[in-house]
Image (tube, rainbow, N blue to C red; front, side, top):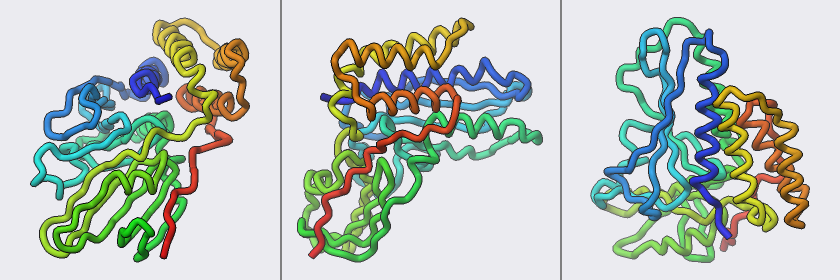
Length: 294
């Protein structure tokens, strides 16, 4: 059982497009497009990078840009460039949610409008992307050894990812699979610090975000239903999120897979992408990482 990243990211992108149909006086438009990466290696070669760009309508100036990459291993295509991070040109790492690694573009000559009416738009985009919830620190540790033989210089853990720096002595190789096993259900922003030579930085995937098994039993039906709902809203039809939640519950009951945790996730997810209220799911996938110390 695996997460259908394309279906979920399509839902998120549809929700972002809806921002064009609301708050029209704010003078900001949202454009979304996909692009094949040219200078980074993705472990899923069929994957694309998804761009979300915000423009001021009056001037046409770009005021913000976000890049979403489905969760997976990410390397610089050229090994000599792996000291650079995060490999996405002109972008800085922002967060990881349950479905994607998210970067924010660094605009070389940002020409921001004098009015601050665009700021609520940025807040809405970041809420749909679930930035705030996934950047809450869980654990921070420095200078310890693991039973797997790694010397950890620094560890910072968050709900969906860890930032990990490890030391490497001499010509010894680093076992990436061992590191993945240490952090199940997490994305790993790994920095390898050698005695000499260059620092190597890569992304590793410890697997999909955690979900109860009942989530996967209805994933296809639920994502289809939510996609239809958002597509109808884009067409100007009136839709009620409460009725959508009832339909999700009915899908679960018909599949004999009703699970309160899974329903709470769908309910909170719908609230967030439709900007109904602050989502507070009952589970966040914060399973304890397997890091036994000496």
